[in-house]
Figure (cartoon, helix red, strand yellow):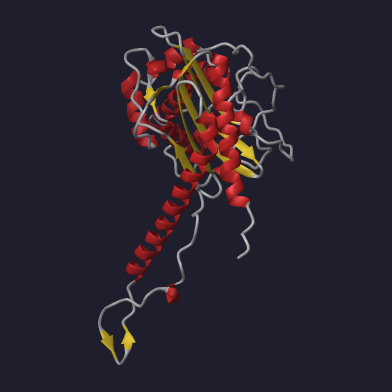
Length: 348
């Protein structure tokens, strides 16, 4: 689960980046509710031909329902676009793959999951382990210890397995991960047995929820914790930064911050910076079959949109084949989601 993959793209080192300010808040509603005067007049007592006004609570609930309905409709449309966009990627693709994507600015999200298949996480679970560790430190009212930071950096940046095993034990193993995931909003992730953290089972939709927990202001993770984890995920070792980065488009502004060497309590506050991909990849050959698990999760900038993307795959004939598959899917999904959001209205 570690070491630079054969045939992966090499990239130059990047300066450290804190969590962008735009991601410190929850997604915006897709659509606002219609104005009160455009709604059907409420039923109720009538006097002198005047309809009795609805209570503030009634209007509030209707407004929330309208926003929820609009969001559900937008997500359903995005699901359909995503399925269409990935049809040719899926055709002839070996094994299984699933993808979940969200626009952090609009809140529109889509999931491609043609079946109920769940995937071994391999090393993407290391992002989850770090989130669990940060939650534990928050609960105990402390910063990470020096030993914990010494393991957290290598676990994320170079996917060090020994560091992951030590932190897996530190969070309480599978039980500790499950407890953290409940707080983070993950609903379909089962920790691996014993010390086999890489065999944790998950879905693309749940990995998208993890990315949201790392980037959104309404997360159980504090601002300092989110900044610390996000910054580590922008410093992935060259050779391990394949995957969702295939969907990244060039940035147009520059800014730099110190490297991620501080504890969460001392981490810099979120600030607007150059959009830099933040990610964690996982790869694992299965001993029983010789086939590969190849996964990628992360945050990229694509044509002015900040996208959260998770792509999971298994039963791949080789690591290289798995990388090609997840990269093709990530790039196609980013195009599909953003093109539909930015396309001009059609003329009637």
